[in-house]
Image 1 (cartoon, helix red, strand yellow):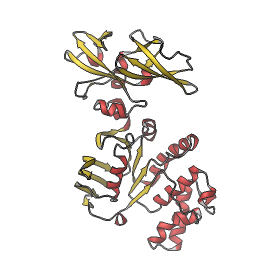
Image 2 (cartoon, rainbow, N blue to C red):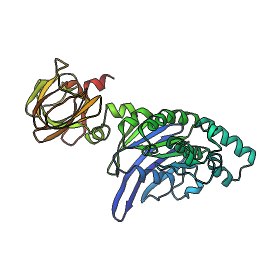
Image 3 (tube, rainbow, N blue to C red):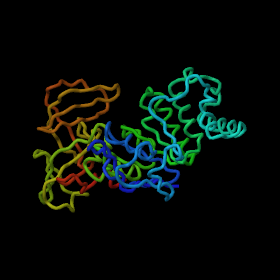
Image 4 (cartoon, helix red, strand yellow):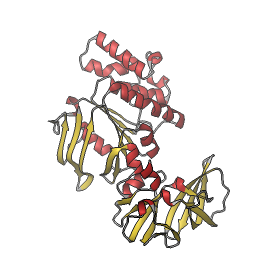
Length: 362
């Protein structure tokens, strides 16, 4: 069981929503579409489902061309971020509704509804109406109605976006278990890198309608193919600074120098773009190899146990994430430290030329 996109694109009124895309999703895999709002995640899902027709390319299901097939004739289920349940029906009847449309017998319906409800921990709530449930329970009801169809492809379009933190954490933990039990191809859209890492499986990063990389989730995170993918798969987005290699030395931002060892040693002399994630900046020199950058502190955001530092380093705007609560004065000069082992190098076109040493060793 595979879903294959071959050169699939979507153009609306002259504007490309999805650029030509090749993608193959295998049976029993969790596949995350990760990208900011308007990057093309929902557009790509609608093409997969058959809700929209591609402008170019083909969509294959188990090797058969289903490009022009109606969504009703495909084994597809979708769950949206809104809780789409029938409010006048019980949870039992909500889950049973697609089975009744399929003409299944009462015995089959009862068996499948109760099995799906048990998988989603809804058995004690089968007699309740959706509005009597919590937000997480309502979303589980919507997910149960999607899964009970026995769909080979389950599309989840930011399904946890409208839930509070506690409910999101609860369902994030449950979805991989549900996915493993169902055996379907799951496609899960999110704007949050942390969610992609928690779900695991494979991740496709999207930017302005293009899939920039697709692969095993930790590998995409540790070895982004280019600066765009690195920016998408970092929260806050990855910081960048101009870099140059000169012999056995690396220079960052024209001000900080470090030995050109590890992954940097084999690089040709020249100009590069250095990238590093927010959590790798520090306000204390924890590593003897760390280099110092003097920045202007623009503003701080305290989350409770951590502090976001919004910094200007010359013309480059950075965000640092440091542990603890730090009362620092906006507008002041602040030294921050970065271990070169946490630096990725990209060429001037944005392609990765050297992964960070810590990632290469992972």
